[in-house]
Image (cartoon, rainbow over all chains, first blue to last red; front, top):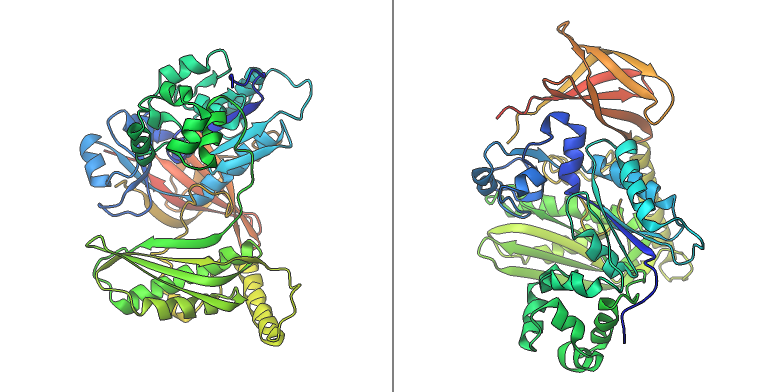
Length: 405
Length: 88
């Protein structure tokens, strides 16, 4: 199969170092200075995003702040401000939606516009530069984004990563091979270290070798699944990633602010997470049938427990009740906890139940509480045991998903 | 760590309400101690729903420090809620 010869019809827009750029936009004195966005104001916190000035000094995402501050003297740590990032996300989404009805926001800082069904549109390069300018006009002069244009989503995203920051690149059938020649395997979206090792094991060390591998070899030897065939098409510019993801679970995690908390104190933070998960679940108009709780210890052990129920539920109280029962068996010396709801079904009230009255009462109570919280602000009504946890377990940035934005 | 101050200071603000992309532009504010601050740039304005109450948040600077002003659209009041000079 040759490369996809069609004119590129997909634009990928990626905000550069999004959260750090937004902070530099909103706080003009930080522009040109190394900035790190963190989730908590403690020395051992990890860096969520670093500005380009910080990255130039070797600061990386995920690095401990103390280590980063040694690399970049004068590094300014800013606590993340999800509301502000959501605002910019909505602005970006509004801009992208002006060009096509087929827009998918891939995460809080990137979106894809598909022009396949729009006849006689303007040249995509012109639209790409216009989006950059509109971002500066409508959000702020310090905002920059990368724009990638390609025949499919994969190549558009690849193009968006070629020249950071503020680049605009086009990948077509004509320059596809030359582009891969300048890249490493891990530069390809979807190829991380583990996948790279698997590719290396079958003699594929570069993107060009990956491109030249036959569909049969990829499907039957390398991936041993349909994924091999998809990679074969994806690398050549044919669309295989235009699908909608289904929400299979809703969850939240929390790294404890102090390693010396008692079991009861950790349980109250778990309760807070359950309230947050319940709210997200209802926001997605879903019911759950299962609860999964996990804990990571300071000795890098992973403990988990789960329970599946016959009847679906969605109240904070039920989620917390199941989670606390499971958490009772958790080990000590915990540094991180998390809770997920799974076995999700739509909350459409279509199924008659023998326990209809009980469920209806639970619905009414939970809906009344949600109504109060929507009117007067989050956590106006919540359980007494989470009275003092809000100071620690704050709302954070949802990476990789736009479901809660 | 940065040296951000968290405040809840009622302030008087001189602002222009007009059209365009930024229909409300605070120009100057007077702090409770009488000091007047001339705003040289609005970094970002974003809305924040506190329940059903809308509060507009303005991150601004006077070139010496960055400030956060909050305009309560229901009460029609302004508060200074943050100040940072980001000194090394």
